[in-house]
Figure (cartoon, one colour):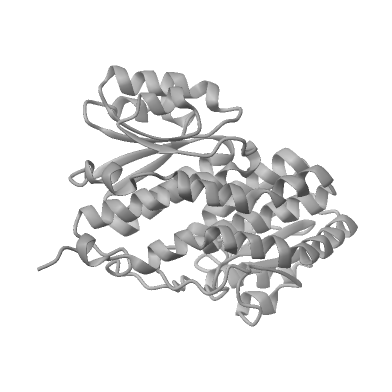
Length: 354
């Protein structure tokens, strides 16, 4: 009987990973006018802060939003606690905020409930979703649509990267920054280079087929990437993968590092790279199995598994490219473990939480 790897399990997952460069190209071409219209309304209403309502991968896109709107627009961004709106019926005061509901399907009742309450309080509401007829898009005042096309795999790939790009576009439009629009325009080619740079992913992942736990570390913009990669590992291969900030790592989790412990380090060029040497040195000293997503040879040189990134991507856009080798690692880890990531147990494409 053929193994999952031999029979090509995860074909939908793999195909949609490779569709991401073109999905991002469409997002940039078709989404700019909406981003600019929404940014004009934001400037008119001048919210004092932003609130992101999301779940799963969309919640990880919200973590990216905290950095991109914080660094480039000097806006405070918080992640909503939807259970306050549904289970506890104790919604916070949202007056004077911009509330973004981020959901690929736009159908999760708890995310819709956050925007419904925001509308009741006269807050500015925007849906970031693929479906213009979804309940989320219908309740929001404005929509920033995702143009990646329909996603069939249960594990989010191109919907996540399009969410990142949509949020980056909105931040850029709000800042009216011509240079950042140029940097965004180069992203599809950078994404294609990231796909092509992910050499030997099956071989890299196979050595970890027996691992039952992983630590995934990122910081700054790529704090979101650490969470997204850990989620992909969990849902595709059923291994425990815990995400940490490179700063929080030293407040306790560092004690877990030991011989053979798999540590996936998300370390593209940027401000947090200076912290990487201490993390890397600890892993080397304790003989942990380091998995590195990076464009720096010095970081990759000490890794048991090297997941290279293309050079030249600005840090604020690096989460879009850095997630690709993490997605491919999760895909091939699942195959090496004899699993089909297109059929993760107990999961379906649209998850409706309340």
